[in-house]
Every structure is written in C-alpha cells, then in structure tokens.
Image 1 (cartoon, protein in one colour):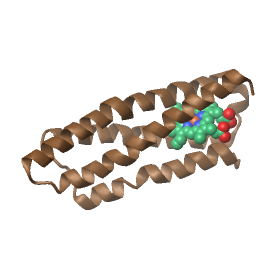
Image 2 (image 1 turned 45 degrees about the vertical axis):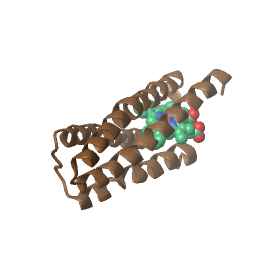
Image 3 (image 1 turned 90 degrees about the vertical axis):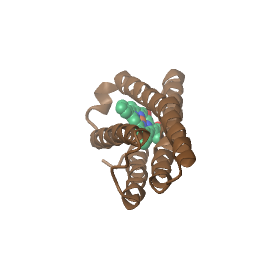
Length: 144
Ligand code: HEM
C-alpha cells in the first residue's frame, strides 16, 4: 500500500468515526425529546438536533463516502471480486437509509410532531451499533 492510499484511508476512517458519533447521539436525543413536554426543553432539543444533523452528521457522511469511493476506485479490479466488499456496501446502503430517515425525524420534531413512541426511538437507537459491528468485521477480517 502506498502512503497516499494510507492517507486516504486515514481520512476515510476519521469521517466514519465522526459520522458514527452523530449516528449514535442523534437518535438518543430523539428518545429524550419524545418525552419532553415543556416548551423551553423542546426548543433546545430542536436546536441540538438540527445542528448535529447539519454540521456534524451530513458532512461526516460526505467525507466517509467520498474517501471510501476514492479508495475503491484506486484498486477497483482487486476489490470487485471480493465478497466482503459487496456485503459491506449493502450495510452502507442500509446506513444511508438510516441517515436519511434521521433527517426526516429531525424535520418532524422541528414541526412539533413525534411520529413514534419512546420505545421505538430506543430500539431505533440500536441499529447503527449492529451495522458498525458488521461493517468493521467485514473490512478488517475480510472473512470471504
Ligand atoms: C460508500 C461508502 C464506503 C466505501 C465505498 C468504502 C470503501 C472502503 C475501502 C475501499 C476501504 C479500503 C479497504 C482496504 O484497504 O482493504 C475501506 C476501509 C475501511 N472502511 Fe470503508 N467504505 C465505505 C463506508 C464505510 C463505513 C460506513 C464504515 C464503518 C462503518 C467503514 C469502515 C472502514 C474501515 C474501518 C476501513 C479500514 C479497514 C482496514 O484498513 O483494515 N467504511 N473502505
């Protein structure tokens, strides 16, 4: 592996880490927001959620994807034949769906709507952890 490739990989991993920080914390805010009834509390959650989504989560996703695709493009011929890569990309597709749905929930809460129960948000909060386990094991162990 060249130094250039390793730099790209380092930036990819930094993007992934900050993306996950937000993917873990935003749904946690939904759990608390959904049970908050006072106006001051609700308004504060709205600001926290919107800023986390716009300033951390979306740009981090961009960095992870741009640098991930860049790495892929540099050695496409050898990656394309490896099974783990395709399962990883399927996991990433699920993660993108999750990210997008978080954006819809931020919007719903901003309009003082909470489409789900507190229990739903608690379970929803666990999904990124499952995808993280799957994807990291696939890229590091490369089991198939
Ligand atoms: C479109 C999205 C993504 C693409 C195209 C992509 C692609 C890649 C590629 C090509 C590598 C280099 C693998 C190697 O050198 O063996 C890599 C490394 C890595 N990726 Fe991604 N990735 C994406 C998203 C993610 C996500 C969401 C995660 C975490 C959940 C992740 C975690 C990692 C890790 C930990 C490595 C380092 C593996 C190692 O060097 O041992 N990637 N990625």
